[in-house]
Structure formats: structure tokens, C-alpha cells
Length: 427
Image 1 (tube, rainbow, N blue to C red):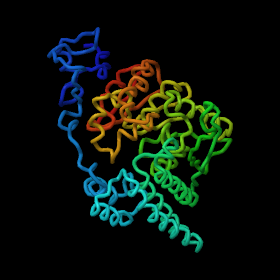
Image 2: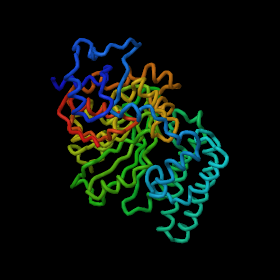
Image 3: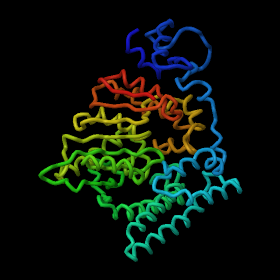
Image 4: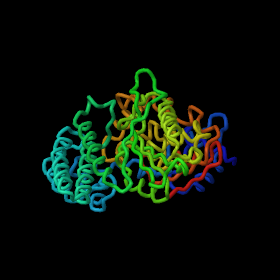
């Protein structure tokens, strides 16, 4: 069997229900494979479209996680453990800032998608912020920074799972929480040894109806200078992770003497680009590079992109469309094509995302309804369908888990064998 056949995972290829990638390939060798329509001919099943069997496995694919039922269930089944360990989405927070409120949510069966959910968090975040201000005025900056970070974490939970300027009027409380998260996070960042810089750079490649500024957070090593330009890592945020949520990653980047830049991707946060335009991230990226080039303190031959989740999708696109401008790209948990499959979306809604996954993804791609996303999304945004991934790319590393219930491993399997040579790790 030629490696090229592995690439047709999307085109209704029937993957083995369980097993490793090698087992999938071996199973395909034993089938009567038709190169004309990329479908397995046996067994013949008369349905509107071939039944997909995902590497994830049918049991995991069909399983509906119970944390979607209420905010209390979300806490007890998923978030309590993450909060106790300070892991996303609780990075920078303190467990006790969340426990009592979620217990009340559980008692009153509050829905996490409701306005009430967000409204309850706002005064809690404001109280933490006020404590930080008091400590700051007393010159106790270390303690003040901690409270500013705690406030930012509270506001992050308040604006979950997704927020964007496009939805400002649909979800005003979420957007208010987002504005508060930015304010408190910046107060903390200004107290760091390597300060967080809030930059608005000209969106030179904007469309007529778009805002004219790109918002980004930049941290530059103290060693950076015009005489010794630094490499740059551009972090592309995801669906529920915005540019305020990369502290640990930026610390690791700075420790290596590199510059970190955090961006919201189209359809999320403050990204000015129209998410319904397939070239939106290309245009944002070009505008950021324009700024870096003009400044002169950045090594323009050492620009890397690291994208996670939805940011990984855009990272893969940039690896191809802007390959000559990039030293390399990491696509971390990235979707490329199958993540927009109608069948996949029908179950991904109930997988590990906190809540409202399909609604959030639809908004991020500029759709008003999930039905529109399922009808049009794959044809419009698939990197396979629009032939992006057939071309050459900069060095590209894929990292994803076989059990990812949002970005199927099929997308990474396909990409490792498509276009330019890639590197991949499935775990």
C-alpha cells in the first residue's frame, strides 16, 4: 500500500475502530480499496454517507461526558481537580477562590451557559482586584501581584467557554468579564521582572469593514537589543484560551532568551480579523511581522509559531501560506480537516470541552448557528479541501493525543504524510 492512501482518512475512509496507526494501515491493506472514490468497498452499507469509525474508538466517540449537565457537575467531575492543581483554566488562581461558588452552583443547578453563571463571578473577581490594589498602595507588590493574578483567573472562569468581539452584544456579561480579565492580568504583568507589554499594532492588511489594530501581548528578554536581535515565538491562542492565558509558556520561552508574543486568533478575544474570511490569520500575521521588522530588535530569520487547538489549525495554515517567513511551527492538538466533519461534530459537543463546544466553534468561524457550521464549515475551512496542505511548508511538528475528543488524531495522521516532510508524536 502506498503512503498516499493514508491521506484519505477524511474522504470517508473507514478506519479501524480500535488500535494503533500501524494497525489501521494494515487493515487498509487487506481491504478492496478503490482509488477513484477513496472509499473502502467492503462491506457495502447503504447509507446517505459512509459510517465513520474513528481511531478514538466507538465507545469513546459515542460517550457523553456528564460534566455538561450543570456548573456543579462541571466542577465535581472535571474542574475541581484542575483547580486544586492550578492547571488550565485555573492557572494563577487559588482553589478556595472557586470552591464555595461552585458548591452554590451545584445546590441551585446553575447552567454554565447562563448569564447568571457569569454574573455571580464578577463581584468575586472585583473583590480580589480591590485587595490587590490595596496591597499595591501599601508597597506590598509581591502580594499585590498574586491578587491581580487571582482576579484574572476568576474573570477567566467567568467568561468561559468562549468570547469574541463579534459576540459582544450577544454575551455582554462574558465580554465584561473578558475586559476585567485583561485589566487585572495586565496589572499583574506590569509587576513581573520581564514586564508584560500590551501592544496595539496597525492592521495593515485589514479589510474595509475590520478594526484597524491588532492586539498582542509581548514579553521581551532584558538582553534583547538592536545589536543582538532575539528569536521570537508567536503563541496562537485557542477557542477558550486567549492571549491572557499563556503565563507559564511565556516564562519558559523567556528562560531561553527568546521573545514571546501572544495573539488571539480570528473569532476569539480581540482579534480584529473577520473570522468568516479564510485568509484572516494570514493577514493578522503579516501585520505583526510588519511591526517586528520596523522595530529592529527581533531576529526575522528566527520566527516560530506555536498554536494549540484552534490556534493549531491556524498554525498549520501559516506553516504553508507563510512558510518563507517562518523558521518552524508547532501544531499542538491541531485540527486540519476532520475536526469539522459533520459526524465528528455531532459527538464532539459532548466530549471534554467544558461546555457549548459546537456553539463556540461556530462563532469562532463566523457562523451564527451550529447548523451553518455543520453544513458549510468543512468545505470552506478544511486545509485539505482547499489544498493548503498539499503544498510545501516550513518545518512542522504535530503533537496530539490519540484520545483527543475535539481534534481527532486522524488530522495529525493525515498531515504527517501530506505535502512536505513532517514530524509527529501521538500519545
